[in-house]
Image (tube, rainbow, N blue to C red; front, top):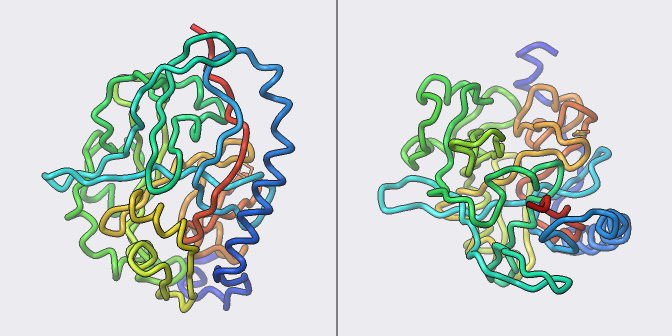
Length: 296
Ligand code: FES
């Protein structure tokens, strides 16, 4: 695939994410993943796992069983972007007291269990009491060229870096859908890195404000009112973030990846390992069984 080909992707044949479709997909996701995952819970010793409903960017194609979980974002008074970590509480599960990080946010129960898959449940940063300021930091090899040009490893993300979010493009798909970045979260001074994608998009901004949006790709996006309420609480100034670990076999996907062009995913998140595709502008409730954290 040449660079020129990437600039002129064919007409996308994928379906539109209008209200009815989003609702249906959400329900289907709950049924399918809920029943498939129950067994792993009963055989895994450990803490703080189990049935949980995460808000996720929808998996629309490929073998991945469900979407990737969103990380709610907030912007501090200096314009730095951080992920929200839920409040830490002590709960009794099976007669044993355990620490959980869980809070009500935008009509949803937001929990650290959202990120307990693919081994992430063993990472230090996912332990409820791990101390972090929760800022996103850029890693040593970011996925987008603009980051390599403007940022150094370890830098935090300021909103100013995204001021051209309504016109940004990388030659893949259409311009103007948003500006992405890759980084990590709650991973300073830890062995394991929690990979994240941050995306500032006019579509997310409009969905939070109006519940519907028309993207630069000509697509109409619409979310039900409960998802709009969630987006109002979990995004800020058009910024959203998600744990960038494919729910299939844990690879690292990419939004606007050259590899996704021939799979009609030039404007979506594409996983190069087995061609799973995710739609960041379709946020769906996703029921799954979070893996328990290892016992200490
Ligand atoms: S599609 Fe298999 S790891 Fe992503």
